[in-house]
View 1 (tube, rainbow, N blue to C red):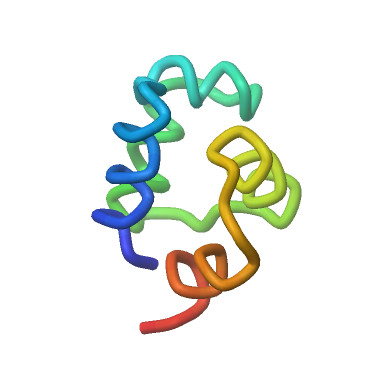
View 2 (tube, rainbow, N blue to C red):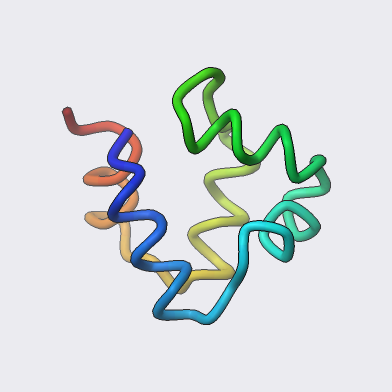
Length: 67
């Protein structure tokens, strides 16, 4: 996962880590663990991120599926 690209999209959308965690219905600490690569985002969470951050399919692939 490319954390920097995700964080950049969040910054562009003016969405904080805490706010995104609420959108995902997870704890802030859990969101931080996912950003740090300690656990993976689920398909549902990626779909929420895509919608909230207005990401294209290509951006989703780049962030979550391309090393």
